[in-house]
Amino acid sequence: MTWRWYEVDAASLEFEHRSDWAVEEIDPIANDPAGGVSLEVRDGGGRLIAGLDTGVITDLVCTPTGQPPAYVEYDAQPMPELESAGGTEQRFVYRSVSPAPGAGAQVTYAVVSGPVPTPEAVACGLFDYFDLTESSGGRFSGAVHADEGSSVEQHLQKAAAFENSQEFRDVKRMLVSLRNTD
Image (cartoon, rainbow, N blue to C red; front, top):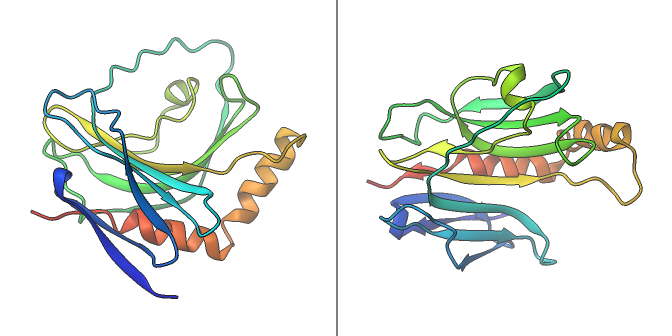
């Protein structure tokens, strides 16, 4: 399999992806006055693998209710080549939380800033966000969705099995390759 680099000029970022995956710029969701970009990475069949958004300002407010959910990190890796203007440490993470707000379980792979979240923080679900500039950050993430009609346990079993797949290794390679170009 061959890989190639994709440069996100407007955000001074780049990442590598499989040559049979397509990267398409879409209307940005940025809410930073400085702007941002949004991209989708799709496999050869058109299935969404991951999305990249920059220029995202967040003000996450969460009021956890009930007992903290179960949080599992299947895999994590530091990303020292992706710098944050605020100095936060970036990392790749593949994780799940169950139960998740509005769903049985939430399973994502993402670039995030900071350490493992507290039980209180994951009570609101997984927040896949990394710091980038002084005023905003971004998301480079995707999800492992439950199969139609599957139970929470089956979804979490699928998540655990996904970690051993070639697709996971390719997704991880792509996300971990994200780095600044300047």
